[in-house]
Image (cartoon, rainbow, N blue to C red; front, side):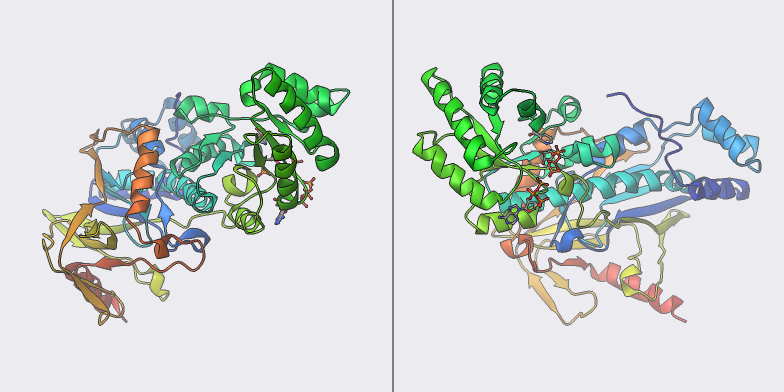
Length: 477
Ligand SMILES: Nc1ncnc2c1ncn2[C@@H]1O[C@H](COP(=O)(O)OP(=O)(O)OP(=O)(O)O)[C@@H](O)[C@H]1O
Ligand SMILES: O=P(O)(O)OC[C@H]1O[C@H](OP(=O)(O)OP(=O)(O)O)[C@H](O)[C@@H]1O
Ligand SMILES: O=C(O)c1cccnc1
């Protein structure tokens, strides 16, 4: 893959803060920032973390080139030349921890933690959130679709409606992580190794004198991908009968018609009728593929109507996350590193949800003796958590608590960069996809269901909880 120069892929206020720090001589102060989101998207009970690989590409290639420096000079004459020289020598020198792609994650837990010079931390914020927010959103939407599609085939068809080229390919990758089987985007296939699949468009049928001829020629050219689009003229009166004629000829030649695709009309009714017609003709192995503005809601409904569709092409609604077009992930400072110590900092808000959780922290997934996740548990980085009898309590209603006696505590944040050096071995996409499946096994179905899922708890250690409350008290006016 070729890498773009993304140093200026940031908000101007980040460069302004970098400048002001530099001017005041505070740019080398070490700070800890965390990226997290406050609310699950799509009223889901969870999200699926994605975006780390792109973040790693970004950090690895994070340099200001001559053009960038020239541009900055033209934009702000107050930027001192020595500051621009400092930018020329910029590289990430800090520490970055992250959860792995494919991890099932929840609101208000750190997904990425950065400890570095404040100068670097500011520059990274915008790009890092841009990648994490979009890819996590699409992976979560894809997981919801996979959840209801069960074992059916899912194909990602979104490129033509995606918010430009980057969204198309990284969205295809996020969808694959969360359980889609293939993408129609050949570039995504090439870059990431995602299996590619495709049928044909109406234009193919319209380009021939008859629908039957169109089907025959397509099937002859590509017997292994013979999925015929049957709705150009009349689905049940011409499309399906013509596909059956071709299917029977293929059968005589020892081949098989792989499928038909429905792309309009009542997909439940058409699929039920088409299934009958195909079965009566002995084409029991020919599958029915559907497309047309599908999403998890429509697929759920179609299944409840007994639709005979076993393969789904999903485009627009997935790639644009149309029922919630953004994940509100944020990046907040949580600690200052001063005189060898981490000093927790807090952001107070009248909106309780927006109050941050202070401190240089780590997060564990507490897994009980039955192999199920009980809660996530946020502790200070230097805290030693109990080996048994861990007390989990609701941070607001602390009387709601329980003790889990026997458990394993899995660390969610993995070291990615230490002192600016990449220490993480990037898994391949297949490994990420399988890891996501094993993640889902950890959770009870009530947390994973699509509608009104039960909340999964993200709890604080007593030390973190006390630190937060002490700071709240200190700053309460
Ligand atoms: N039986 C069904 N139950 C619920 N939703 C359905 C059913 N059949 C199709 N749909 C969905 O209803 C919507 C129909 O949209 P629309 O009216 O644009 O499609 P259409 O009638 O097939 O026309 P077009 O040719 O413009 O695609 C699509 O999202 C489709 O997936
Ligand atoms: O509906 P989506 O989930 O985005 O899936 C991709 C859609 O793209 C194609 O349609 P096309 O671009 O030719 O337009 P049309 O079928 O809407 O006319 C295809 O036939 C699907 O309907
Ligand atoms: O292969 C297909 O059928 C396809 C691909 C992209 C968009 N619509 C359909």
